[in-house]
View 1 (cartoon, rainbow, N blue to C red):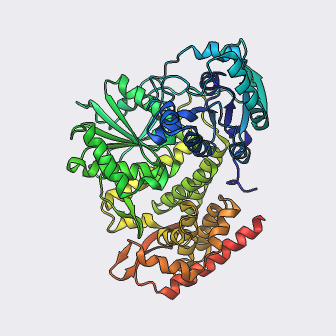
View 2 (view 1 turned 180 degrees about the vertical axis):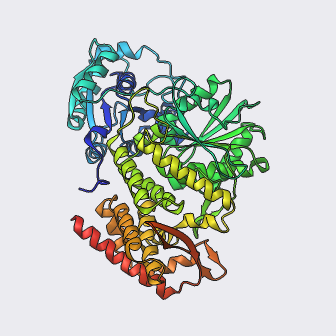
View 3 (view 1 turned 90 degrees about the horizontal axis):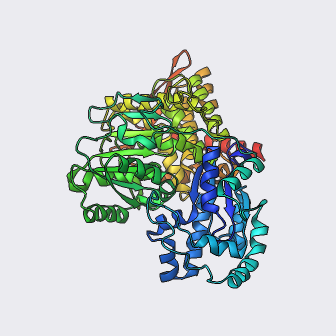
Length: 598
C-alpha cells in the first residue's frame, strides 16, 4: 500500500457514536485535549455548511433532509486525520454511513447510556459560546419526552451502534473526564501537546522579503490563540473582522480564532464558504460581497480567510474588490496553501473555460501559517502540499537533493503526526522539519514575488509543471488531483527540457527521480486516472491556459547549472509535437509506475 493510500492507524479519526446525551461532545472535547487531537462536532459542521442550526433544519426541512446533510458532513469529517469526532445520535443508523466509517478506517466508539440517564442529562445546558456559529441550537427536537419512549428508540438504534463500533464504553454514572481518560487508555492514544498563544512561550519564525505591500508570513505552532498579537496583524484601530472560511476549517478551528479575536476586543462576523473549488464561483463571490455589505463591513475593517487555497483565493478577491479594497489576512490550514496559495497576493475565481481565469493581485497584511492545523490533513492533501513544497524550493534556488530531502521529510513527519513536545521551540526552522521546510519555501516564494510582483517574468517560474498539470486536470474532468497533476507536469517539463537539450546527465536524473518520488506519494487509483489519458487529448486543453504569450504557450523548463542545481526559465515557441512527445513519454511512465504498485 502506498504512503498516500491510508494514514497511520494512530492518526485515524476517533468517532464517538451513541444515543443523544450520551456525552459524546463533552467527553470528545476532553479526549481531544488529553491526546493533542482536534475536536470536531458533526452538528457544527452541518450547521456551518447549511447556514442553519441543526434543530432549525429538522423543524423546517424535515429529518430526511437533515440526514442527507449529515451523511455528506460525515464523509468530509472522516477524511480528517488526528481528530476526535462527535456524531449525532442517529448518524450511524444508515448503513451507508457505517460503510463510510469503515472505509475511512475510523476507530468508532459506542458510548452507552440508559434511558433514564439520557433524560436526566438532557435537562442540562452547555455553554457553546465559543462555537463559530450556532451548532445545535436550543433543545433536541428528536428526543422523546419519556423514559419509555427513549427506551424504545434506543433499542431500535442499538443494532446500528453495535455494527458501527469497534469499542463499547459505558458512561452511566461517570464523569465525562473519567470516560475520556478511559478512552485514551483503551485506544492507546499518546498524550497531547498543549498549544500556547504567542507572547506566552511559543516561538515562531517571521518570514519577510516580499513586495513592500506584502505583510509577513509567520510560521509556527499554537498561533490561532493569539492572532491579534502576531506581527503584521492590523491591530491599530481595528474593531471588526469578517472571517470567511471553509466549513470544515471553521468547525475545527473557527471557535479558537473567534474566541482569540473577541478577547482582543474585536467584533467577529463569520461566513462559511462552500467547500473546496466550489467556493471559487462568481455567484459565491457576489454573495460574499452582499454579506459584507449587510454586516456593515467598512474600509478600515479586516477580511480574514481560514482554510485551504480556495478560501484564500475567494476571500482575497472579495477583499480586493469590496469598496475598492479592504485589508485581508490569511490563516491557511493546508500545506499547499501555507507554501503557495495564501502567499504572494494572487486571488481568483474559476470560469467555465478554466481555473483562476478572473482575479486580481491583493497582498495580505499577514499570513499566519499555524503548523498545528496540518495535523488534521488526510494523506492526499499532505501529498498535494508536498508537491507544491518541493516545486517552490526547487524554483527558489534550493538544490534538487535538498529540496527532495526537505519535502519528503516533512511529508513523513506529517503523515506520522510527529509534533514537537510541549515547550519545544517549534516555530524555529531547524528544530522542526516541517517548520524548516515551510519556512524555507515561503522565503523562496516571497523572494521570487518581490522580483516580479505581477507575474510577468521571474515569478512565472513558480508555474513549473502547471501548464501540463492544468491540462491534465481538465482532460481528466477534474477527477485528477491537482498535486498529482503538477507532479506529472514536472516530469513532463523535465522530459521537454531534455528534448530541447537544456537538461541532461545527473541533473536530469535528479529532477526525474524527484518528480517520480512525488508521483509515488499518491494512491495507485489516482495514477490510473491520469495514466489512461492520451497525450493529444491533454494537449488540446492547453489552448485555454492563461499562461500564453500571444499565440504561444509558455512552459517553465529547467536547465542544469552544476553542483546539483537547476535553474528554471520560461520557454516560448514550443511546438505541439514537442509537447505531445514529452507528454507521451510521461504518461507511459505514469502507467508503468501504477503497474509497479499493483
